[in-house]
Structure formats: structure tokens, C-alpha cells
Amino acid sequence: MKHTLSALVRNEPGVLAHMARHFGEAKLNINSIACGETENPDISRMVIRIEANPERISRITERMQALDVVIQVDDLSRKEFVDRELALIKVALTPEDTAQIMQIFEVFRADVVGMGQRSVTVELTGDEARVDGLIKMLKPYGILSMCRTGTIALKRGDE
Amino acid sequence: MKHTLSALVRNEPGVLAHMARHFGEAKLNINSIACGETENPDISRMVIRIEANPERISRITERMQALDVVIQVDDLSRKEFVDRELALIKVALTPEDTAQIMQIFEVFRADVVGMGQRSVTVELTGDEARVDGLIKMLKPYGILSMCRTGTIALKRGDE
Image (cartoon, helix red, strand yellow):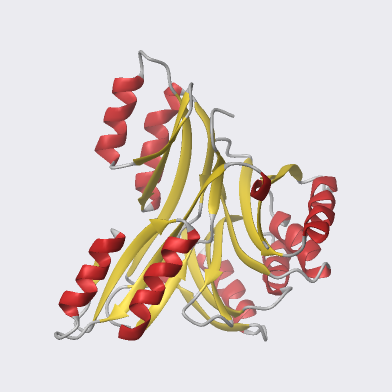
């Protein structure tokens, strides 16, 4: 099962290495990671998507929590949360496919952000399933390059 | 100056630790990192935003390029590229501020993705300056929590 861990960490050089080493040593493969600033410039939020059984997840969560650089870790898989990711996808464009591709973009409400002579680049925001869905639809036309942010998430409600 | 490095890396356990160690050893602080799957499941794309002078950037780029797990590194600061990031922001909501906050969301075309009794959560996609802009506007009302993906980027044109 895929888990989403959200950690508040100190914004210092070496923090990512520290965290990543623990994941590497535990032989856990990270599906995606997104790490950016929070409302406080001294603190970053790291959201990690990882596939493992619950015991391994609680073991790694405990290890993370024990690190000096880690302020808080939440396993968001257990809580209600809003999750989103962003993808940029460059897909091959031929005159005969244009109408169909544009229709797919419309269905997914994907925004065109760039146009080349033989390609079009779109951005899509949504949960993982939605992004996977668009990629699946575009694959037959030829995906030239692609970039996904990985999931970020916030708890639902006022907390 | 801020640089955006985009690396294609093998999707294996320990790769992130490997990369992060090099940044930590070079005492470079990462502003943001986003790592997710690409069109090829064996390969991930890592986009790293980092502030450093050009010599340090070319040194770290060379070191990354020399790693077995790294397939390709581009310094996107030197090239034309589309860059985007995604933010989820939960802001405090009181009846007297509601109209103003909703107007700010409209100006930035930020989408409401969750509502609590005392808060509202929005998502915004845009370049770094746009996300910074919205955060600045919302700060006076009280940002309760926030999560940014970090920048992802694709080259402009057909390449």
C-alpha cells in the first residue's frame, strides 16, 4: 500500500541527505518526494510517497521522528487529507491528432503552457489518479518528456 | 542567483541519498526539490532549486553527472524553459475577511479545495513569483499551514 508521509524539517544544508540515508538504509524506494518552503523560512515541509507494509512505515516514521532535524512526522494515509500533484507533459502533435488531443486536455482541464512546431506542453493539477489518467490517454500520441512534482498534501479541516 | 537543475536518475532505492549526500558535502542548501516518475518507470526526474554562484553550480553539476545513477543533468537556468510549482495553502477565515480573501483567490485564479469552519484551503499553480505573490497577500489573514511542491520544469520547444 502507498503511504504519504509529511514531515516538517529544519531548513539546513544536509537535512535531505540525512533523511534520504535513512530511507536508503531501510531499502525503501521512494515513489516521489516534494520538499519546499513553508510559512516559516526556517522550516521546510517534505512530503514523501512510499510503498511498503504498515510495519515498515511505522519503523521508518519512528526513525525519522528521532532525528534532530525533524520537527514532526505525520502518516497522512491514516488521516483525511487533500492531496494534489502537478505534472508538465510534452506530447507529440501532428495535424491529424490535434483535435483529439485538445479534446483530452479539455476533459481533464489541463492547461496548454507551451507550443512547439511538433509538440504541445500542458500542465495538470490533480490527485495521483487524475494525473495517471491523463498520461494514459496521451501515451498513444507519444509523450516526448514529462515531469511530475510528486504528491503534496494538507490535512482537511481547520487543523 | 537561483539555479534550476533538472536530472534524469535511475529509479532505485538509495538514489536520493546518493544525490543528497553530494549536496550536503558541498554545503549547498537546497531551496526545493521535486522528484517524481517520468514517462519511463525505471527513470525519475529530479528538479532541484538551489542558490549558489555559477562556479559552485558547475562543480556540483559535474559531480552529479559523474554518478552512475545519473543519466543526464541540465542547468535549466541557462535555457528557455517552462517552470511551474504547486502550492496548497490553508488560510484562517473569519466572516469579516471572507469577501476580501475570495477576491484575492480570484485575482490569482487559485482554486478552493477545502473548507473548514475557521479556514479555507486553496491550490495555486504558477511560477515561483506568482506563488510567492499569493502567499504575501494571504499572510496578513493568517496562514495556518502550507505546502509547496518546489519548481518543476521542461524545456520550451519540441526538444
